[in-house]
Length: 442
Ligand SMILES: Nc1ncnc2c1ncn2[C@@H]1O[C@H](COP(=O)(O)OP(=O)(O)OP(=O)(O)O)[C@@H](O)[C@H]1O
Ligand SMILES: [Mg+2]
Image 1 (cartoon, rainbow, N blue to C red):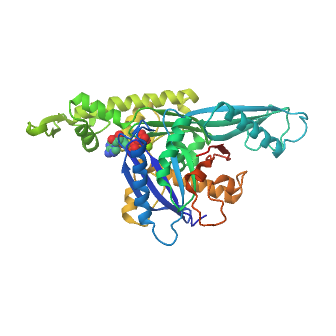
Image 2: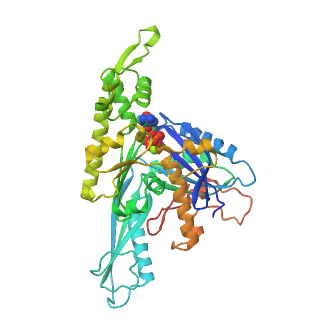
Image 3: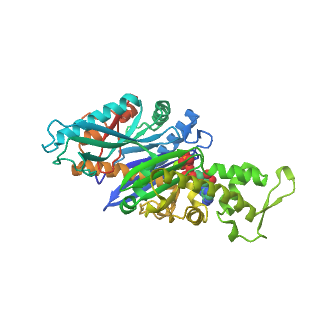
């Protein structure tokens, strides 16, 4: 496992970002990165121009493949799916027991699991993940180890992540661009599950934490309590909405609004001097016009406050905000806005930090490049796949490696696997267990 190379491919609304990583003494070592613009090809995380998205994916994979050219070019592939079509919900499966005084067996748990899998699949054509989050036997407290307990019934709770089948099919089509003879296998994850694996510590997940990924067209909010994902939602807006506000509020072009936001933006207007002015070049020889940096910050602050309030209301759906001792963690390109953590903290009264991916590189320029919250998903995609493969190696997971990783099963033959075999079988990521997800024909 340790020598394996995994490419994490984050398909976002502004960029496709890829990183190639290896495990090195328990650390993730990033050996190559690549990116390609997708503005206008995806809208709020959804592919709207399949050809251009495919081209962007293809560009990024070529960038990476040039760097990893050498003896061992083969790699695994880990990509993401997001958008407001994703639905995350709790499903409980119950089974009455004939002999309540007999110890619960592993077989009973597997049966309960199979029944849940069938029932969920019947109602949902595209199940991405089905994460077991706890079992209850009779009136005993919830546990992840129900085998051996005694009681008249078993209940199993599963956190289910479903997607729109159409959107899933589109993504598969776009991914064909990445088809390569070097792919050994692949997986697909709901973005926040991947991101959390490199950003959140298990302590934070245990104590309760909210991960907020502020992208360009989406914001993903996912909440972890007692180590488990307990709620997630994808908003149809991100940093682009802030740019639009700046454009309208300050009456400037979208390009100038984006450039101003990135160079001079701040989430706290009070910190800025009234006299700080930036000159915006006029169009076609017209005079430059002045823009107040304080006004710029006022516009940004309003929009981010609104986002912080939405995050607070999402938290309130599942728990008292005071229970979140792990606080709020911000990632994504939008988390680079100066003072955004401070504004979140003031608005929600919850401790907030910026999340940086836990990875390094022996190449200095890459090490510097990936110290960036917008690399969280691409690196998380590599990490979550390694975690999954390692768990399988250690024998934690109930299925075999063959079941976990859909790769070529051609006995080392020369036939390339292709996307069809890669996505024929998808698996979910784990938090205390792993389950194979639904099967789809490419
Ligand atoms: N320094 C910065 N300050 C403020 N915002 C920034 C900065 N750098 C990038 N952004 C914003 O981050 C957003 C892009 O973030 P990111 O790259 O995470 O999005 P994405 O993954 O492509 O999109 P999505 O996840 O929504 O599909 C853009 O709105 C951009 O303006
Ligand atoms: Mg993103």
